[in-house]
Structure formats: C-alpha cells, structure tokens
Amino acid sequence: MASRGEPNGAFGTYSAPNAPFGSPVACRSCGTTVLVEKFSMAHTSVQWMSDAGRSCPEFARRSAEGGLLRTCVALRDSIDRAVVAGEVVLSARETP
Image (tube, rainbow, N blue to C red):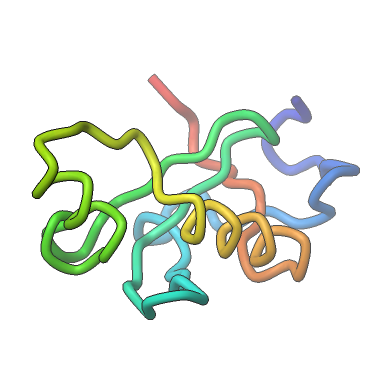
C-alpha cells in the first residue's frame, strides 16, 4: 500500500485524512445507503446509517429465517461499482 500522500495505482486518488468517515453508497437494488471507506482493495469498511435488518431486504429476510448474513450481495456489488467508478477512493486515514 502506498504511504500517505502518494497516489495508489489501483485507485489513483485519496480521501482527505481528516475527512468524515467514508463515502455514501446507495444499494442499486433497494436504495439503502451506507458509508464506505476503502483502506486497500481487500479492506472495505462499511458503516450502516440505519438498522441493516430493517433497511436491507436481504438482511431482513435472513434475520426472519433466524440466520446470519455477513454481507448483502447486491450491496457488495454496488460498493464494487462505486469503487470502479471512482466514487469511493482509497482512504489516507491510518488504521489502528
């Protein structure tokens, strides 16, 4: 990973190190909006702005069935598309 201030070839840009957490991304399936921060291609942090079990139909369905769900495929796809489109950029924030 590039150090602070150096562009990363995978993303090309950085968010400001003192910017609020993440970029808003709306699910292309249900419209639920989450905040997303990318620290690397493999490390994505998602902060829900509402209760996932109530706002995401996939989480609600699995919860009603008594199951656990690590991620919603439609939301993950929406985040991946936002990264490719440059709407989510690599964070310059240092992780603990």
